[in-house]
Length: 447
Ligand code: GLU
Image (cartoon, rainbow, N blue to C red; front, side, top):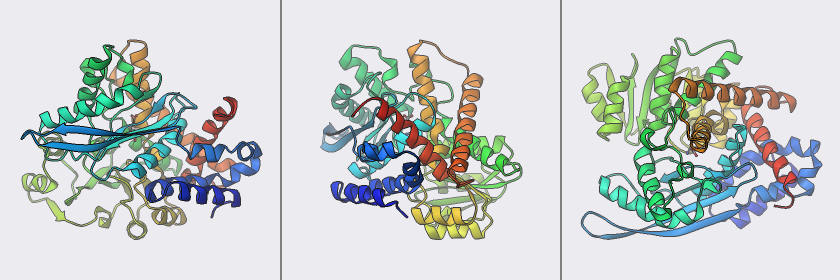
């Protein structure tokens, strides 16, 4: 239910941003949480902070022309939405995927504002990307695409302005090509202009692992708050990209067993656990589908094509693929099968119906804004190291990440308590993330 004032803000957002359904969904979720804040803080409504937060500071859309290995010309669309810079330079990844359009970039950018605020680090919110499909493209094609993309993007970004990173379809290889082109155009070795870099040219330890590790630390905290742990738990992770792989790695280190993971072709069921070296080889080196994993892993692993991984009974679910992958029905299924905790490694992977089902069933539900904030938090640590021309050890960086995730968890719980919704991490994350941005905006005048 929306507070009366917020309902008119929401209607306005719907009218002003037609057809951008994912953006509407992300806005609605935050507005549903912050009603109680307005009662305590009339100054937010008086100064129209919420209306201002829902309108990006700047939206950039550009043409990305490139030619493939056969010489054929392609034209993609590039985006960068600079949503909010009250807390620091715009910060957020780039997504290369055919589903990308303005509505996806705006949903991701909007989420990023609150996620980044929750980390407690000095970063604003932004997001970008392109409807480019990297699947099936050669390394040279990817490089030319990245160079063309940066040839426009470079004029909008900078260490103190806007700092992109990776997301779906953009990993260390792409970040390298993007940084290389930025350096060439600007003639500046400005390491802090992009994060997720390789270790040989200004990257940070643990950045690659950070989203998956961080999400696992967050779930560990949720379980601890309920007097339990990962030890001996059956865990299902969706996806098999960067977030999923390092979630599986950390869950296993903490004593859980990941019995299933998925890709767009289906899922693998491995009752005895997943062979992570084999999964990394197949996904990160050979770029194959999961049926190849099942073929090589032998009899104990089954590949189930074209079905949802959420039909697999588990105690902990860690959606790490993409938005809206857990529907209300999936959530009911998970609850019926004994799921006690959910940690969102992806951005907005649970639909509003799904979230309702989990909260009503008393499942410990860690929303992406809080649970997957370890990625961007470690990006902020990368920026710190770049600014001081320093580099930290793996152990130190992982300790910092764990501390940040513990702190986010504690703040979500405390805020949820304060507002009379104990254990509700969705409310805790939205309210805490919102308040920090709102207070900074108030302090900075009418911006
Ligand atoms: N794309 C990641 C996210 O959704 C990381 C962003 C970053 O490191 O800037 O938070």
